[in-house]
Image (cartoon, rainbow, N blue to C red; front, side, top):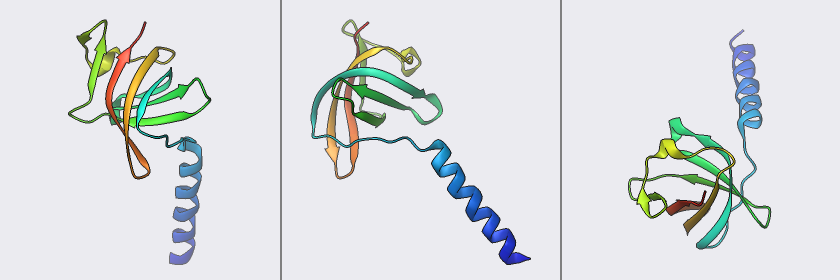
Length: 104
């Protein structure tokens, strides 16, 4: 009985992982332009599709600068479909967003 429960939990976890998983890319440190594919406000996270068909997964930190027209804005200003310019720093297999500028 215990074994069946554990197998069920493992299967559910794997299914959840694949259902929620995003295929993302790690790029070199630099500045990229793209379109916001998804905003996950609860995690302070966005997914950005770049012009060269990469998907960047960006978790905002306390030091990430978010701007629009040269002024600081709140995370809640981000929406799917917006054009953005992001400056990222590669940290191993992770990208840290230094700045995100909403271009429209």
